Length: 354
Image (cartoon, rainbow, N blue to C red; front, side):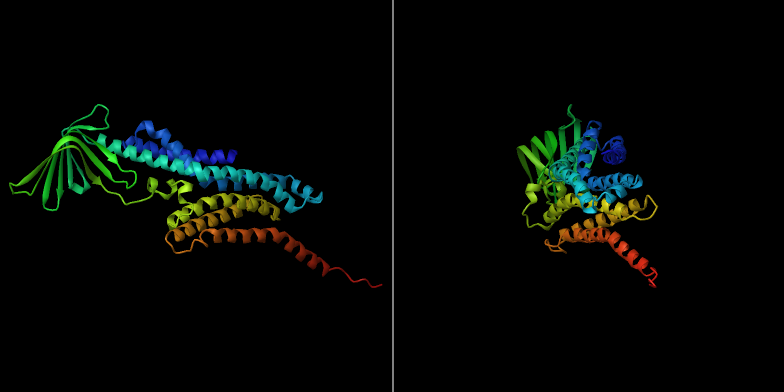
């Protein structure tokens, strides 16, 4: 558990520095800083749980190996398979914890991060509009002028907007306005209240005047996407059974994080048991190297599945099959060494002359 706490502390410190820089620049309100950090750490937690159980198992069994406890257990008739079974009882309980975090809390936290970012961006846009100054949106196609901001800093009063589209020029005046973000599409709008809209072609006298109670103007468009703008923010119940390749890749990724905790715990045990050298840190080097390769292969497989390069039936499962093959190698490697050693010793047994 202290390994997980240490990893969380390191990552949280790194994230906190980044959020603190955003707060200093004004892109993240100070009151959102710790809430954003909490959401981000919950969303990141599934990625650090596999490496934490790998390091935890390696440290526990490494200490038992150094104290010759594993040798005593083997001499007492406790088989390798029995030792793996005992360790797996803890690993299964740990995997249940990972399942709850990965399938439920992490998507909820990811959505919370997205909502906070959008809220911070909205407040940053409003706070960035200064009274008596023009502010451009959409590469200059929309220009906003505000006479004065509201007292709550969430809306604007006495607003002027110029919209240029094709050959026509539109002007809107309003008593008040505020930013609004459509959660489904991600598009950002300025919603005007109680005002007038003037539309005309420059140089011509014919123009249209429209009075309105509410009028929304698109300032920034976003691609149509999933909830929260990222697949990771989707609830697990929303992507189960989906034919969308991105959803299938996300679902298999979440399940893979749970499977990886189980496989990596077995890997840690086998690495310690198959280590015949006196180098204490060799299992750690091998285990971390295998984890990095395994994790990168999962990421590659997820990308290939989301791009429809791999069929869903193959998906990320082939990566787990490779790791299972590695586990079998480490399981039978000591037996193979023992058989080779016996064959070598038999070759040097002198023949009986009698």
